[in-house]
Image (cartoon, rainbow, N blue to C red; front, side):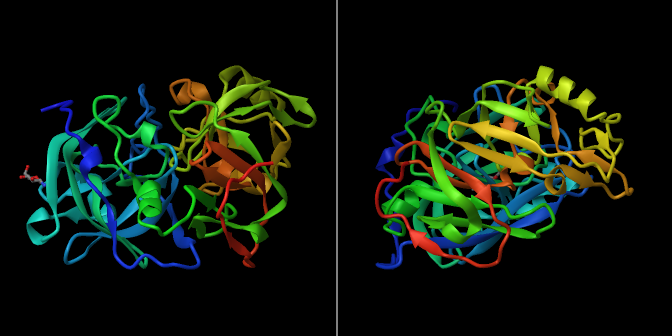
Length: 385
Ligand SMILES: *[C@@H]1O[C@H](CO)[C@@H](O)[C@H](O)[C@H]1NC(C)=O
């Protein structure tokens, strides 16, 4: 039954052997080039969901569910807030390869599964996903969380499963049920981290992995200092920007964009994109299925994203993306291809070191340094300028 009012708040997450020090947790995030048979983007759990065709790159983390552990790979997504994987009984979705990559959960093989309800339902442009809510023992790296709430999908359009790490307000059960502790919150509740803070470092376009650091900041991975900006609203990772500039000219003015690690590219207001496209002499839409326009592979294009007190600079090396046919595409596109939502996805995020502070609803931004050295410090108190 849809939209029941089950009191999910009564489900308590317990931790096994939470550490006393240091209170940081690091996971690798692995970059994947999506096979063309993955025809759809990830699910987006906003009220008017966004579905973007043919996303080529995504970042995943490995996790386990159940007793004994069953293994999964899911897209790490700052644009949504729930964990979902496929049900082992779902065969419709498997033709596109999403099941094989994600893994399929079998509740009959786990002694720790608890069924909650069959209300899991997300609606998005290209269809719906539905299934059951349950709780399970979740393992990620050395972390174990008992009674973790997740969704098991019986139908999800063949996409890759998702670990959503945005705010609780963005959980797909909203506004019909109470929110529940999603992954960052459950980690804090279990004492693995002191503050509800994580940092996401995707590294450069050519790197094969980045780092998802919970409860800490890696001070070696950015230049200058982090500038903290308030979230634009309480519904997700939305940030106000002041400008999007090329060659000293601002093409966009101010606006609001979602920092969305689950989206491969960057989507800006249509008017700004059209003007930028003619300034850059962008070519036609690529036939490679990215939904991006061709650009000369040797183009020298630097785009500056201006925020209050900090500018993130995206160089050609991050924006000019080689395709398999030897041609190149430009990693920024019009928001007419993202239902009018402005999304700063991976082609933006790879240029920035981003600290998501869900406790104080601020986001710290600095220019990324692509380096293997690290200087990780736990976050124990409020951040801020
Ligand atoms: C998987 O699907 C089967 C058949 O619809 C259902 O009985 C079972 O409860 C589902 N498992 C989960 C964990 O949702």
